[in-house]
Image (cartoon, rainbow, N blue to C red; front, side, top):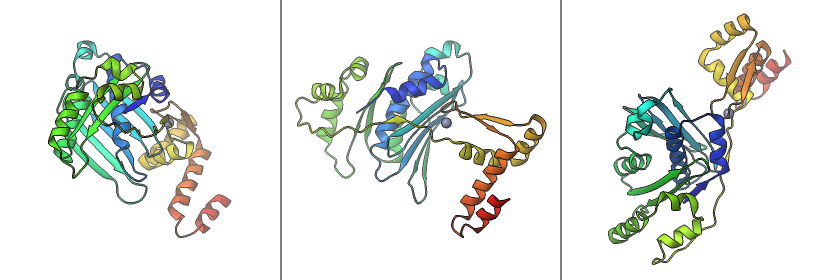
Length: 280
Ligand SMILES: [Zn+2]
């Protein structure tokens, strides 16, 4: 089970989300925190919903240290669609789930978006792509994003227990999810079961963007365009959509980013080239 309070409120501060969008973003955030906790090692998880409707993107990232960031992109005004479900907002959509271990290759699973809630979409993903029976109960308001995950342990199929635990958890209400302390809620739901609670783990909002990283990205997507813009306007301004931090790049800043890029590229062969660049 997860309760995100400050982490979620910090995400809400970055943009003025319409209620229908923030509800989805909060639910996906709670779900991502829960799913990230099931991944071993230092692997980070990114969950995205990409749409063709007024809602074009919902993206949430969580690493093994519980550091999270999230955003949604949409076109105003939402009008009547705001009261519809996920499908009305997203249109023809995709669910993209990316896991990235610290070393080795990242893994990406993509499925078409079927279902009218984040929980249903993710449950289908786990059923069809991972053959891992999974249920999610998610809720979000302006204060808290919260969720409960029930997942079979791979290799252990006890159909009776699985059915019973689902039926017990299905009695949970949005109000209980949002308002009750975790221990109290778990005891209420599973009081007939033998319950073993583990120590809780924290989450925090952390974007991870920096002058160097954003500069790197700028250069890699269009160095020539960046240099032309600086020539005409003196600088290029980039703001991070996740945290609203603004980064400015003039000629010197772009040159600095090129040095960093070179350093990253040359880190294995040695430091000579880095020094050559830094000396200039
Ligand atoms: Zn940022």
